[in-house]
Amino acid sequence: MGEHKYTGPIAGLFQKMADMIGKDVYYVNFLILMFFTLFEVAAVFFEVIPGTDIEITRGAVWGVLIVVGIIKGYGIAAFFMHLKGDPFIYTRTALFPILFAALMLWGIGLSNPDGIDNLPAWCTPNWDYSYVTE
Amino acid sequence: MSGSLHPEVKNEIWMKTVLISVVLLVVGIIGYAVLAGGIGTMKHHAWEDAHDDLDQAEADWNTANETGTLEDKEAASDAWDTAHHADIDAHLSFLTWDTAGKTILVMFIIYAAFYGIAGFFNSIQPEDDDDHHYGDDHEEHHGSASPILMAGGIMLFMMGFPGFVTTCKALLGLDYDADMGGFVLSTIGSAILIIGIGNWWNEDLKGHYEQIATSHPFAGQDIRKAGMWIFLISETMVFASFFSSYLRMRTGWCTEWAYNAGKCDVVDTTTASDLLRHDVMTLLPGAINTFALIISSYTIVLALKAAKDINWEPSSNPLLAKLFPTRKKAVRNYLIVTLSLGSLFIILKLVEWSHLIAEGFTIDTQAGSIFYVATGAHGLHVFIGLLVMLFMIFKADALEEGYNEENGQGIEYFGLYWHFVDLAWVAIFPAFYLY
Picture 1: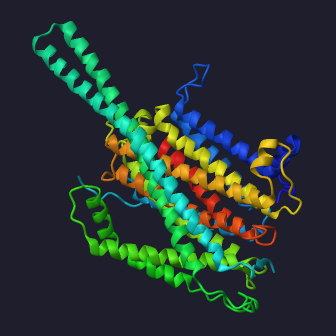
Picture 2 (picture 1 turned 60 degrees about the vertical axis):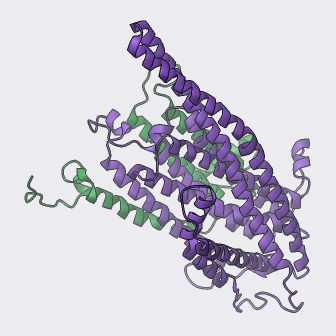
Picture 3 (picture 1 turned 30 degrees about the horizontal axis):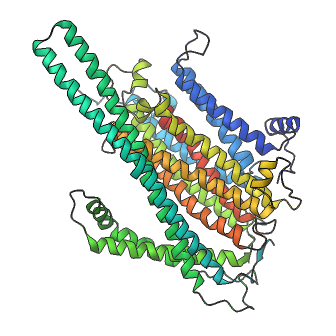
C-alpha cells in the first residue's frame, strides 16, 4: 500500500504529481476527484464562463459531463480499487459488463422513436418502414 | 496463504456491542428530539405563520381585485408573490429539519438493532473448542449456516413486508388499517436476518485462513477478492439496466434541456434535474453527497493503508496525531469517519427527496419512478455498506491488534464494494442531477 510506483502514460502522471508534492498517489487521486466534481457542477450551474461573455453550450456541458465522468471513473477504478496494480484478470473482469451495457445502448437505438429516421444507420437495423401508414 | 485466526477472542466481547447499541439508540433519540422535535417544531410554527401571511395576502389580493385601483392590484400581487415564496421556503426549511431528525432516528434504531440483537446473540453462544479452527485444512469447506439463516429471514421479511408498511402508515396516523400479522412476520424475519448476519460477523471475528483459487482464470488469487469482483459485475448490470431504462425514456421526453437544445417544441416532462440544477440550495445536497462519497472513498483507503503499514507512525500534525494516535485506533477512526460520511449521505438524500416530493415530483410519474428507483437503489447500497461498516468498526476495536497486515484484506474487499458505490454515483449524479 502506497509503496507501489505507478507507470504508464496516465498512471505515471499521477505518480509524478504525487512525487512532486511528496504525497502518495491516493492523495493526488483524491484531490483530482474533488477538483473535477467541482468543475462538473460549475459547468452545469453557470450559463457563461465566469468573467467572460462566452456561453457554455449544451454540447459543451455534455462533453464536460462525459469527460469528467471518464476521468473520475478511471481514478476510482485504477487507484482506489487497485486495478492498476492488481493482476490484469481483475481489469478484464471489471470490463466484462461493458459488452452488455453496449447491447443495452444499442437496444435504446432500436426502440427509440427517432430510430426510424433520425439516428445514424449503424445503430438501427435498416428496417423497411414502407408498410407503416398513418 | 494469508488471513489469521483469533482463537483468543471470547464471545463475551460481544456484550460491548449491546452497550454500544444502547448508546446509539440514545444518540438517535437525541438527534430526533433536537432536529425534528426542537428545531423542526419551531420551523413548523414559522411555516404556519408564513401560511397565515399567504392567506392574508390572498385575501388582500382578492379585495384589491374587486375594489382597488391598478396600483393596489399590482401591490397586492407583489405581496402575494412574496408571501408565496416565503411560504414555500418555510415549508422546505421545516421539511429539512424534520426529515433529518426522523432519518437519524430510524437509521440509529437500525444500527442499534444490528449491534444489539447480533451482539446479544453472539455473546450467549457457547465457546468453540480450542482445537477447532475454521479452514485449518484449506480444502475443508467453511460450512457456515449464516447464509441459509439470512435467506430465511429475508423470505419472512418480504412475506410480511406489505403488512409491515401498512401497519407503519397506520401507526403514523395515516388512513390505513393495521395488518399486525404481516407486521409481526416481517419483524420476526428481520430478527432472523440480523441473527444470521451476526453469526457471520462472529465467524469472521474469530478469523479464518484466506482461501486461494486454484483454477483458471483466478488461479493464485484470493477467492474472496475474485468473488467480490464477480459480485460487482452483477451490480454493474443492475445499474446498467437503470441507466438504459432512463436513457431510453429520456430520449422520448421533451424536457427543458431538449427544448433549449431545439430538439422539440413543447416541454412535456419535468425531470429531477430540472428542479435541482438551477439553484445552489437545491443542488447543494446532491453536491455535498458527491463530495461526501469521494472523501469516504479516500478515508477507507487510509484505513486500509494504516492496517497494512507495519511501519505506521502517528502524524507530525498534532491534531491528526491526537485523532489517530495508534495504528489500531487510526484504522478504527478512519472507519468511523467513513461511516459518518455515509450516514450524512443518507440523511441528505432523504432531505432532498422530501423537497422534491413537496414540489410535486412524485414516484407516480415516469421521470419520478426512474429517479427514485435508481437513486433509491444506490442509497440502499450505501446503507447496506454502512451496516457492514458497523461490524468492521467493532472488529477494528475488539481484536487485540485490530486490523493489521494479516487480516487487512477485509477492509480491501469491503473497500472494493464501497468504491463501486462511489463509482455508480459518479454516473448517477451527472445523469440524474445535472443533465
